[in-house]
Length: 200
Image 1: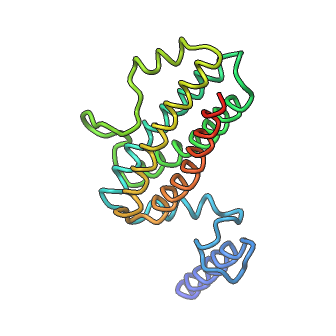
Image 2 (image 1 turned 180 degrees about the horizontal axis):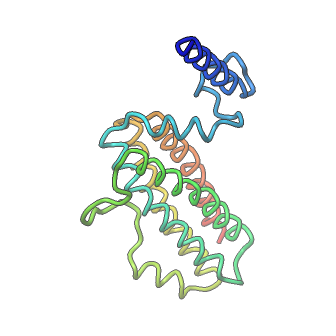
């Protein structure tokens, strides 16, 4: 009797698991392949917690402070009152995109049992110095807009370079997918910023 109850419980559990996997928009898709369904976040956590290599770890550990500075630069601009609406919109978009990515990468590192920051000092292309940020804080009007665009173009170019390294060397599928997204979105923003800079 005990054995049959155990088997029945196992069958019920399996049926529930199968039912849960079919809640996406495409019931015939493989679990984990549908990233647009309601279970996308849980699937993402499962995949990101899987296999990874040193390149994945370094990508997340370096991109977190890189993104953090981009958010800081955007906040500096959003605190100003005399900006072109296009600059304000750009800063808002950058903050909205990179804030959630910081949380995502931090979650991955925790799932991988890796430190959320690198030990020691590591230089990253495109990072601004303290003096650079002070100049941005002090600037006003068109001068501030030009400085922000110039700095953020360089900052984005550094991020794209790091993301391309992850695409080439990374193992974790979700980390590589994020790197591909960063390359696509930030290369597009670099073009837009260069075009906008030319009009100021």
